[in-house]
Image 1 (cartoon, one colour):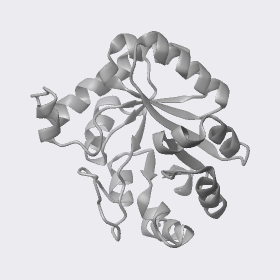
Image 2 (cartoon, rainbow, N blue to C red):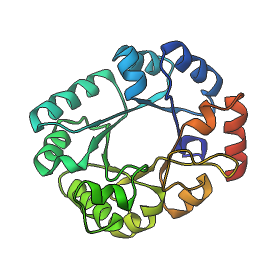
Image 3 (cartoon, rainbow, N blue to C red):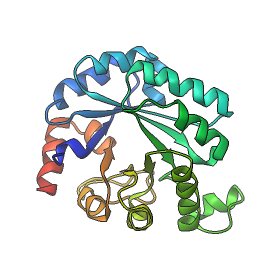
Image 4 (cartoon, rainbow, N blue to C red):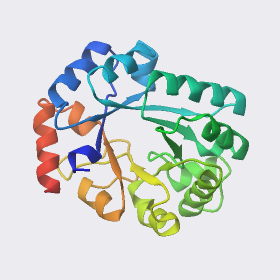
Length: 228
């Protein structure tokens, strides 16, 4: 896997036209694209089929969190769409995680979300979690691995801890990645691409530094140069 293959570009836009314009500019060297709630709500399942038809891989970032049966049936539908990766919230508990794991196809990367990269210790206290960020991330990650997920989504700042704990048993996906020349925005636990790869990330999710750049392909080239 090349460095370019480890970058997932987040298509956090509102229309199919915007998404396909970015895809046209970035496909080769980038092969993996994230469809989140913003684009999926606007365009529906067809956007996954359209992107897949170009030969690109799709990471469907829906962060499922519902009763086990509903999540399992949704995972089955995502399998049928052909997405290569899907997120679920590990805070949904063991029954939900197990149901999702049993429903996923053999080729799907089922990614368990630990704690959102926009969250802080204050966020955790507000929702009743008193044992701190690292403990919460590790607790949820352990639950996810025990009940069958094969990937984790976590802040780059927790990557080393997770790699030590789980080795190569799961893929690690780091969102909130910010190149050295970009603004952090609402990401509270961000890292640069190089820092995240050195910490153990298998994939880097990068959105606004690329998609909001006046020349997105130039932004990708700058990131790849930074990693070379």
